[in-house]
Length: 467
Image (cartoon, rainbow, N blue to C red; front, side):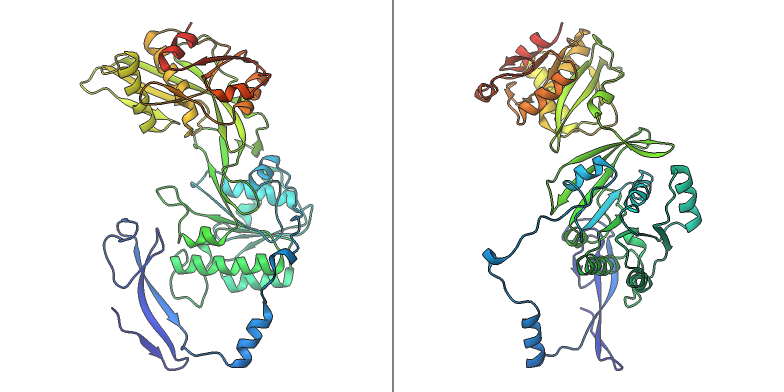
């Protein structure tokens, strides 16, 4: 273990530690692989300074006790958190119904997915409610102005600050007292008191803590943009996601126009909510009826195409799943999944082979979810299996039928939740029938909006779905 050294001017103790950039754990010496998260080459040398230990005086202890005394739970008044409604309804949905004063929101996403564009548009909308300070550490004021001109944004209440020094940013906040604060990005801000570089574990942790003090102390909503690692998680220590109130991810393929704003943590609302946007030349626009958009280019009575009714957060979505099965030219057949989990695809192919009798050992199988969406819900298993069987037999799926169900290893179909919500969305888009597993839960739906076709096994489902 490195020996501590002492600064005679301040009597502060300085130690060298090695902090993992992935999980934030601290190790006494450098190692090639972090023992906590098993990632390689993630330990970075960090200098840690601790003040000279000492006990507070009795007067100081009494002041600490009087500053924040314990309260009886029944006597605490819980306010309703008067929310500020953002100009984007999809953003309000993800936040749980609006922006809570004093909240700290972290937004992450891949480079170029549209994080800065989204927050610049949102800042322009919030400028009608009060002054907005947009702090940028990655772009110059001229670059932001060019983007604002392209997006058609112009406001006298939107202020741009290009600064990375945390002390200077806090001083601007103190003098200006804005109603809203946006920081792009947290990895570019640094504290002079720390000797590590900007973006390191200690810098990100301490800067996030300072912004938390601003949000809670001055009741200012703060938005932080965060970089992501190659694995897709927000860069920096894991404590960063613990500090903030809300964690959002902006997802999407740069080759597709649709973007999903997904909530994974929210102290003021439900998690796993999603907002759907469309990227265009004038920025991100809301998609109010995503199911209709995803099905706009569907070819009815085409083999290898089925409709899955899935749930994203509390919102039902109807998406088209396309599959292609063709005889392989190699010894080992290919399995390609775009938008669905590869392990689920392999499971469905195995069930089709073993339980239904469809020989897939010599077939290349390709599965794609239209629109660039990522579906992880098991309720889409039935739609994937029907699409594969339809392509293999070259038989189209009925155009007026929607599919819901999870597939078990025995070939049985299992019921899923939120059935009434799924059925109402399917009926609204013109579907006449819905194929789903039979269960006692269906008796609770007294007046279904469309005809229900109940089956017990995947074999029965293929007989009902394929024309």
